[in-house]
Amino acid sequence: LPSLLKTAFHRSQTLSYKNGYAVVRRPTVGIGGERLQVNQLSQAELDELANKAPILTYGQPKQAPPAEFIPAHVAFDKKVLKFDAYFQEDVPMSTEEHYRIRQVNIYYYLEDDSMSVMEPVVENSGIPQGKLIKRQRLTKNDQGDHYHWKDLNRGINLTIYGRTFRVVDCDRFTQVFLESQGIELNPPEKMALDPYTELRKQPLRKYVTPSDFDQLKQFLTFDKQVLRFYAIWDDTDSMFGECRTYIIHYYLMDDTVEIREVHERNNGRDPFPLLMNRQRMPKVLVKNAKNFPQCVLEISDQEVLEWYTAKDFIVGKPLTILGRTFFIYDCDPFTRQYYKEKFGISDLPRIDVSEKEPPPVKQELPPYNGFGLIEDSVQNCFVLIPKAPKKDVIKMLVNDNKVLRYLAALESPIPEDKDRRFVFSYFLASDMISIFEPPVRNSGIIGGKYLGRTKVAKPSSTAEDPIYYGPTDFFIGAVIEVFGHRFIILDTDDYVLKYMENNAAQYSPEALLSIRNRIQKQEAPAPELENKQTREDPPGVQELEALIDTIQKQLKDHPCKDNIHEAFQIYDQEASGFVDKERFFKICDSLNLPIDDSLIKELIRLCSHGEDKINYYDFVRAFSN
Image (cartoon, rainbow, N blue to C red; front, side, top):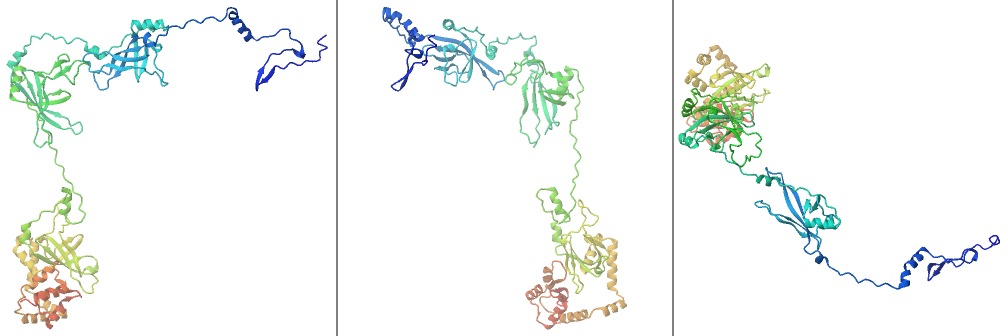
């Protein structure tokens, strides 16, 4: 009923502010302002009252005196933990060992938590040993944490400065200390041993009792007795290989073998006297002889099952010595006598191993390209820097300025070429030919030099063996082919007739007959033909001949009449009979010829050929008898 009549249900204020801070206070009245029956306390206040009950009863207790302070360097002075460990080190530059085991002692100093690594000194090890890591605090990770004795145990790996140590055991004091601190130790491990050190601890070789064979007797009996064999080593199957000659010496006094190389003069090799020094030669080695240092020490009887003896060296059989196969093809007389008495072998013939020379390779010359002389072009095939062909100097001196001239016509189906005439000049000093075509007025063909001085090969000749035209090939009626053009010899000059008379043995009967017929025609000309020729001669010819006779009579005693022809011939290199007008007047001035005379001027006019050429042959005839 009282709750039904209740009209106020508000709660009292429990939060207030003091000096600007919120402060919690306990309510003093209940809901609606009712009186609280019990003053409620928090659990924390109740616990505080329970704890302070003895203090309220008996007062504040007295504090115990502090314990006596002992520093670490006093408490752990000379107390060191010792661990046995090892690490593995690679050995890259050795054929006997690939890795090395190095045993160390790890010390942990309890007074300052420092560590050191010491390696016991091994006698004659050749390795700097002793203190590997001096005493210091060692870091165990990248965060800078240091090793503590709580991190040490047996059967663990410690990485110090990039090197990993394997801890295998510890001493008695270390074991008791760690167990007293509540650390459970791992079981100890067996210390790893260095294989090379253990190999050196093996006992030395035991010497075998010598056999009944008396080496001293062999030395005294066969001293200075040597078997000599001649052998070859054929290495032509390999690149740049060749067949080389050797001499094998077998010394009977101690069964040693020596191989000498035979050096030939200018063989291009260094003169080393020995291919293999004198030594005993193994024939069959022991299988799986891995521990034998073959590159350093000599071969002993323990590594060899069989040695080479004198019965292994037989003429006509191959012999393999240290990987090289030698073929023995001969021996000296002492060796033959020894094999006959010792082994009963009397037939040891010499085997011919001389190499047969291959047939010479014929040199093939490239085809002639048509430029220059064949001899000059061929020199490029013989040497890198071509040299000029040798010339016959005596022939050049004897036949100097001797020229054979021939008149020829061109054999051609073209009608315009039938009336063309050519002057062939054959130079006896150099066997060269030049061709000159006299210009003909109003012919439509430009005359002058047709072919310069050069040697002309016959059509039937080849580039390897060229055959050139000679003086015997030129006679009246002969056909001369010059670079595809055929010429027919029509006439010769008087010097050619004299040359053929003096060298009649060199010419063929056909050539001599053609010259004989020409001489006969000149000596006995037909009257009708002579009258016909006189009638058909152009008017200028008769006038020229009459003028030449008149001038010869007037200049009969001129002092320059003997060398006029030679002066003009010097400037006429092609022997054409024509010179330039400018050159003609210069020569006349140098010879003091009376060119101002009216008769001489008329002669020059008649001898003029065109506007720039003068026929000096007709001009010179006027000054000679």
